[in-house]
Length: 136
Length: 136
DNA sequence: TTTGGTGCAAAGGCTTTGCAGAAAG
DNA sequence: CTTTCTGCAAAGCCTTTGCACCAAA
Image 1: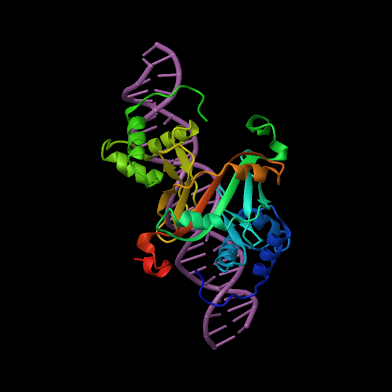
Image 2 (image 1 turned 135 degrees about the vertical axis):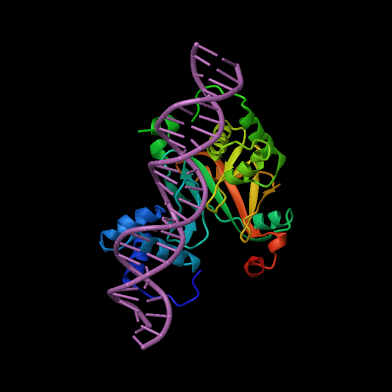
């Protein structure tokens, strides 16, 4: 975690700006390629470090929606996601967050609940026939 | 994926038996250590391969509940999970799966929905004071 | 037999980290 | 100035894979 104050470096500003431009929930590597168009000398390590810092501070969200890579969301508000089982694309789902569900869960466990995640898996419009039609 | 027929090898049977013994959602490495007590010569690669095959065939579930390692669940029925933000422990949550939520989501997207996952994050009884008291 | 499975070790893929120099405040 | 940040490269960690031998059916 990061205890000190954050500096507004060029790298940090551009990473955040690029992430906020899109709704595609890019991976760290995606962001690296996006940012590189404006800052060709930036390193992948810097992108990882900044994404970590920004999400630790609640400025962005780090998503773990399945797959091998983490994804990032420039929208820090609570919302749900849907992922394509075929191409991996992740979209926002504008379903109002269910507040009651945490109370219901609280009654069934001894955990102190902090938050919940709801993720849908399906086939996106481009992959719609199912897995076969989606492989190339 | 696996198209051929499955053989009932000693390794496969014991991996499945050990996984079904527990409700702790072990990682591949956890299982490796569990199985090694009965089959000392088994390799970690075999554990990974079998867990993959078993989950591809719907006999077990592979979980991606956050953190760096995947976890495995010997209970193939649909159910939700709760993870401790401090120690990483994952418990089952016996909240009845919400069937309606997939219909609601379907109206908001062009995806063909296959399934959904609901995961809670909190502090487990052992870590209950929050993150500070939980670090050793 | 035939064909899928195993053990071993190496390779892979994503992410983190040590370090010396650069830059923000 | 002081402290954080950056670029680079190496290291780390989890998982997958190639290969020769083994074993289930």
